[in-house]
Image (cartoon, rainbow, N blue to C red; front, top):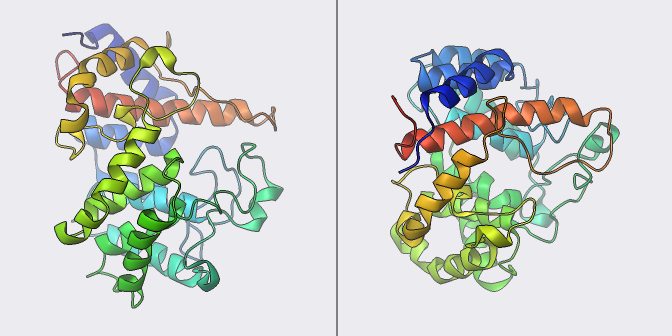
Length: 302
């Protein structure tokens, strides 16, 4: 079984400690070196606005300082890593307040980015109204976080939103857009078994449509089995188990010479700002890769 050897691990470690953003550096220390989650919260707070939402390039492809549902769900994903930390609830509550206040009733959901985002450097796909034809992104994801935190922050309309999300997937979604799939998989993992059973067939078809099983046929940005799991404890592990050894080998082989994993996409605009965003992505992707390899016992010595 191929493993990330100690030299390549140390190259990745040095990249995270010396070149990653402060946030990813703090996350790396927390997850791999017994670092403090308080340090993660301190770094994350620099991306939070007075309205409770998150912006300021937390999602590297969207540089605007203004809050967005996109960046706020990224923050809530980080805040999930330590649900019992005494200082995280305040940030979660303010983030969920932001989302409650920016709900768009006529959409039965949220805009993924604000109109102001178009005034800042960003990837070409981040135009206002992006993903409007695929309601599940970001809405299924946002609903998942309200389910997560329903005791901390009860949302009056939550049952309505859950029902809307279930019906949308079964009746409206074309089951073809991978970001919508990612959002629905996170939503599915929070559902009681009875409700999850309602969308099981649709989710199976969605995964079959979006997840590329043949590494040789992949070009550029796309979904793979490791896009939807970073641990063998994933509910999707049994479906893809036969493919994972080769996928993990491929992940090890795709590490860059400098120790980092790199994005396989570009912005196609704002060429002066892309190099900074690319470097930030390298920290995000390297952390994700190391987390996955550790969880599947693919790093020598740890």
